[in-house]
Length: 168
Image (tube, rainbow, N blue to C red):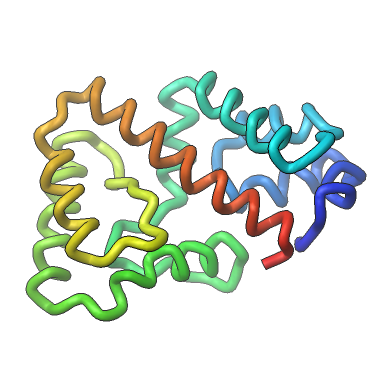
């Protein structure tokens, strides 16, 4: 579903929510953002998205996290979300085997420590940058890491909303 803002505003609620779920897999977020239509401009949509993300319970954030592949693993499927994820992680394409192995081991340590996938807005980052962030964030306590996860999720969602509006 590739729509500009006017088209998005005109969609039936179920169709708007379906399109939004490719941006963020939290059903509560998608329903809230869809219900807030019509949006005057893209910035109003982004602002509403940010507000709904900030209000999510941790269980809603975990629902969103469950749709993200581990860093270094390619999203499967032909859908828009999978395609966007593959593009976002393109910094892994040239990664050396040792960096890939370190990321895989770090992903396992992270998931054991925090109980969910390591989430980072990978757009524009190289594999070494992602590995350094992973290693640094392993030192966070649970509350600090949840704050970082929300921030990274927000960055990803903003990028994906822009892609949705551009029809890419």
